[in-house]
Image 1: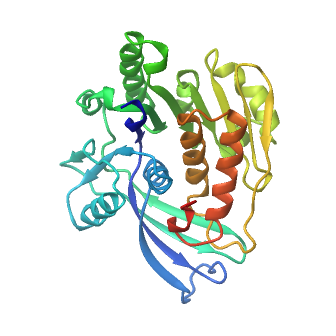
Image 2: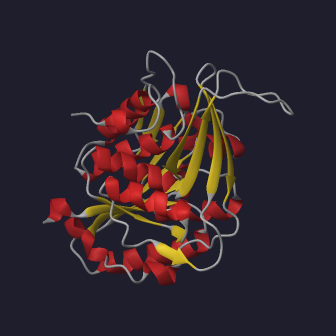
Length: 301
């Protein structure tokens, strides 16, 4: 069944050790946190969590190294009915871990990530999965050279199918690393972060979309979320679309808000919704998520 096909997210999964504080600690001091928890993290992994909570069949592809941290992560994936059959188990390296400081009083979230010694998923790993089970594949830009080869495999697969059966390709360019920018022309839908937009000299989402749309392929959609300013998008018709942000009454936890926005957009577009509806829904659930810790309050039903 076409509507039972899954959304695959390719990218990072890590352990987030989240410390909630009443104020950001000064360097070289001891302080108590209000709470601490372990949570499965990583952009692509978080987007899967939100897709699953919204009721979308989804799958995750990324690297893990066997051990107690990976056991915790896998148990959480399975508890949320996220397909993990495409996980690439690595012999070398450690499962990435992030120490996160969440400060509700300022709305900040500060992340220290260690993931340098675990190899990323390769095109060889990717070539082992059956593409026919997916309607959409989303890449969190990481090892762009390998990811480009994966996208080319999907393009080859799509070339043999009628348009309505093809897999939609999306990419998220979040980090300010020049090699990642080679993915701009390879997504049907491209998410560019506020950080990247600013790094490239743009001071608003409108300016970023106007300045960067020539980097995406013909007919693509370019989306730029800008935290409390909401999000903007432009599609092949050239119309600039906007959604305001939907901040919660009380700001609690902004960690993963961007991943939540991305998932809301993927969910809406993959179900045939308009770009404006996708932008608005993405902003709405990202705002909602900022009003509680974690993701479980996202369920709309």
